[in-house]
Length: 377
Ligand code: V47
Image (tube, rainbow, N blue to C red; front, top):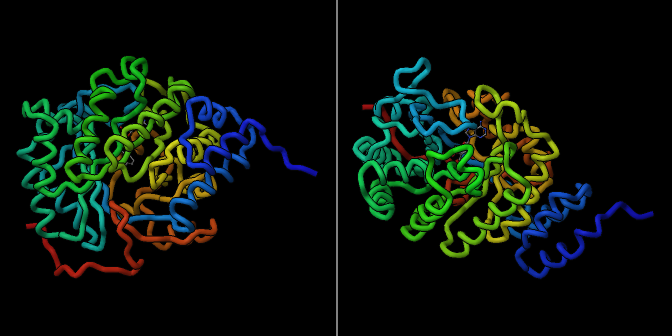
């Protein structure tokens, strides 16, 4: 008796074994297959070629420093006008206090925010970053998205290289992967016309890599994009990584429909989610890590994603953090997962939990920083 095997996947298996990058047609065959188990097995084999039995997580703090934003992206439920009810703009002292609220035992500070005319400025960020680096040298700063870097450059009338150099010198270790959405012009014109375009998103990441700043990449799936546009997006990321290496992880962002203009698309399905992880793992042969971010697809789907090529579950967040991008758009995930829970889920999936920092240096799970008690002042 033979198990059902989709024969369209056989030439793809051959290419993967030979290390040949997959084409657009291959990517479409992966999306179209109903042979989910073979798809998962192929993705797991690629994952294990990259990271063996390891599955990574990071002890981190997560802050949305401002939700004031005038970009008006149609998928967004988070943005507010300055005077609108629900607008939250943190002072630099509040950001420091929030980051330190539950101590210093974390390896990453992850901050993203809106295009806020008052807060998104080098005058606000450079001193704040230096302050963090002086007090918390063991914490890597994963700040901004390329959309925010583009805003900073335009605001200060500087080139990307100049802005990035200033940010790097103040301590920027990594740029977050947001703002990529879907690279197709058709998508961006209709959904997020006021945001950095695809060519500049890629240029910012490539310039950052050249300056020694690492980054992540994302893709927002589940609205008007076609399957071809999803695969093309992945191919453009692969080409960008080949031109200027420095992307650590790819993170698929499942569309969340509550409270935005695209609500009628509804939630992505579990099947779409796990396929998305597998297709990404198989197309992105030059990316080391595919991240299943528990906040986005939920802990249960993310654990299953480990059987579809994902090798990372992102971060704990702090127990007092208040993520707002996904919570304002309807996520049922909580705000915090402790490291014991990550280890339990990863081990149950047959993998070895590994604590990392942003750039994937590995730490014993009970590692603690040697910093003295810190206060806000
Ligand atoms: O660019 C906004 C997305 C991104 C919705 O680097 C939405 O590790 C789904 O940068 N439904 C910002 N997605 C978040 C971001 C990020 C997220 C996770 C991991 C990393 C990383 C970075 O959030 C935006 C947009 O694509 N987003 N609204 C929504 N309703």
